[in-house]
Amino acid sequence: MKSLAELEEIRKRTLDQINLRTSNHDIRVVVGMATCGIAAGARPVMNAFVEELNKRNLTNVAVTMTGCIGMCKLEPIVEVIDKDGSKVTYVKMTPEKVARVVAEHIVNGRVCTEYTIAEADK
Amino acid sequence: MRDLSLHLMDIVQNSIDAKASKISILICADKKSDLLEIEVKDNGIGMDSDFLKEVVNPFTTTRDTRRVGLGIPLLKASAKRASGDLEITSEKLVGTTVKASFKISHIDRLPLGNLAQTMESLIVARPDIEYDLTLDNKKERFIFNSFEIKRRIGEVPLTHFEVLKWIGEYVNDGVKTIFGGILDEILG
Image (cartoon, rainbow over all chains, first blue to last red; front, side, top):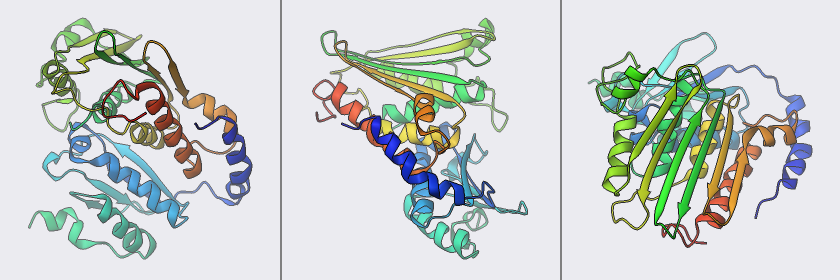
């Protein structure tokens, strides 16, 4: 059984890292979390982003959620918005696709074109 | 929806949209009466009685992207399918309570699902909201409060990965302790 006392250890252990961090978020990852998104599997997608970003120690990325983006048949939908506000919309996301989006788009700045909404429209 | 934890995520979303600052979730499984109840109570803006009457209608919604809202009708359908029901009470400017019930042993009763992941996702999305989760089996209780955790970790944010991981495991432990042997899908 987990105990609340462990939180104290986590606090001590992570405090040093926190001080090194800037609270500036360069990139925002927005996951659609309305009924349509949740039913299509948005929750594991959001979780995969949190895990993948932590694995790579990317602290400049914020993960948030939003309501229905308006294209329910393409859910789970994820928007990646960079510092200057330009937005890439990924559709029909899965946890497997998340790993690639993090590695290629967020780390290396190369958009995963085949997962984008433009590609789904074709 | 595949399981109850996804329904829960969806219903809590309504509370967030209603600008709630505190959301209390109660899951109570009583083996004796074969009854599972899930209650979501918020302090959001509430609904007036006219909207409340229409809220289980799929063509009632507050969203502006399309004119259907399926969150509550789907939960009601899942409850009805398992000999349960859905009850909503609300007061304008005070808050809303949504309560769904299920017959535990009913063949069509949805499994609880990954409650830990629902809590983690909600905290990642809106760490500023106070989430209170109570698991109850009429003998024992498990209580989780996100602001209590916040107080304990001080300047470390709730959304820090290690904290989230701890929260997930903590909730999972709670689910196993309270519902193991009562909800068949959960091993004690």
